[in-house]
Image (cartoon, rainbow, N blue to C red; front, side, top):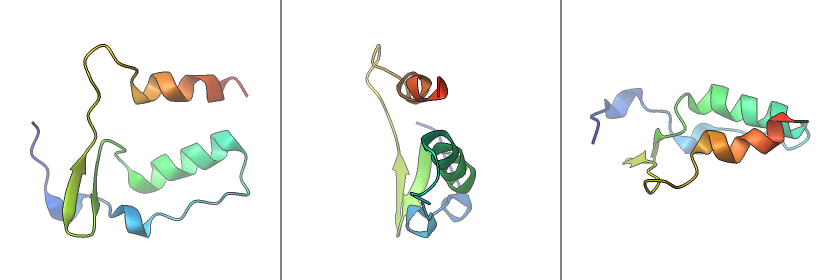
Length: 68
């Protein structure tokens, strides 16, 4: 497990998603705001996203949207 400075993580509660944007722009805006979608905080809790070995990565899940 990696160690992250809690104060440097973006609080997901401060992220504002613009639902009027096209899918790809909305994803790009979210990623710009959250900075690291695998490590962020929610209030006082640090969140580390994990996926099972051999399971789809975030890139795998987003790839179909890149075709638009």
